[in-house]
Image 1 (spheres, rainbow, N blue to C red):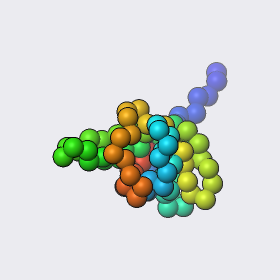
Image 2: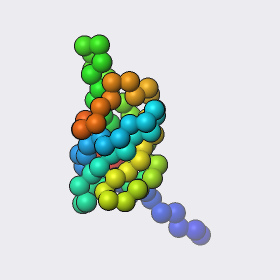
Image 3: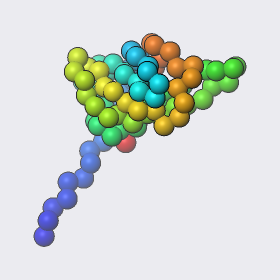
Image 4: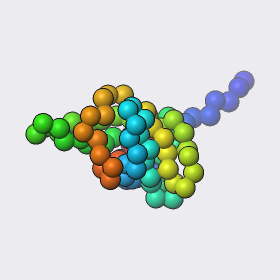
Length: 89
C-alpha cells in the first residue's frame, strides 16, 4: 500500500504587496509566516468606491521572504503596501 502525504496547512500570516505586474503579484511575508506554494492568498482592493477581495495563488518562493503569486481576477486598483492574507489552504 502506498502512503499519501496530506498537504499541510500553514498558519495564516499577513504580508504586504511589493510589486504588481499585470496578474503577477509579489508579496513579502514575515520569515515565520511564509505561505506554501499553491496556497490561496486574499487581498482587498478598493476601486470606484467599492471593495472587492482578490484571490491569488502562490506560484514561487523568490527568496528574501517574498513570494510570487498569480491573481485569479483583474488586479486593477491593487497597490503596493496592500495587506495580503495567507488562507493556509
